[in-house]
Length: 186
Image 1 (tube, rainbow, N blue to C red):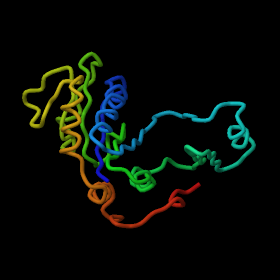
Image 2: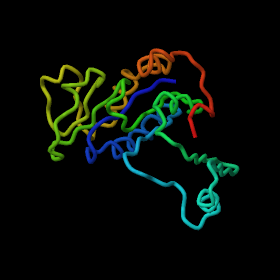
Image 3: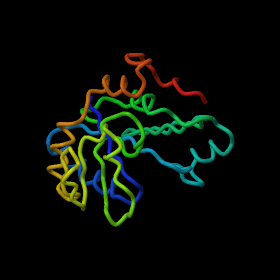
Image 4: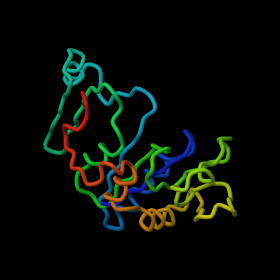
């Protein structure tokens, strides 16, 4: 498995780019997983559904399974760490992380000038390229247009890193340490 992130300010178009990028990568024969950070409370469960009712009743963990997929919902005391989340991914060729912009993994910055926020790449050497609607001639790394999905895919594949290297960069003390489903405190 190789890993790369999409980083940028809220409203830059990370999700829009990612949902266009995934089919492009799939067409190249890759199995792609995504991992998204949310800055706010979120719920994937629907009020009134059995799994929601189980959690509301006090279950600390609920797994819903069918023939086609399963989802696990776990109540936690503290936010999960990126290395732990990466270790939980199933087999895939490429994991794309959306968010976690301050973490030490290779990232493609998604930058939209109209956001009015400063670019991240001047202060983050882990940003390996930029997808932008604004030119950055002194970026010191590849800069491609936001809508150039094939070029973005080329960069993602060329600049992604092996999972082991990413885990070591995220937490050198834990490089190679196997962690499983029970690695979080609940």
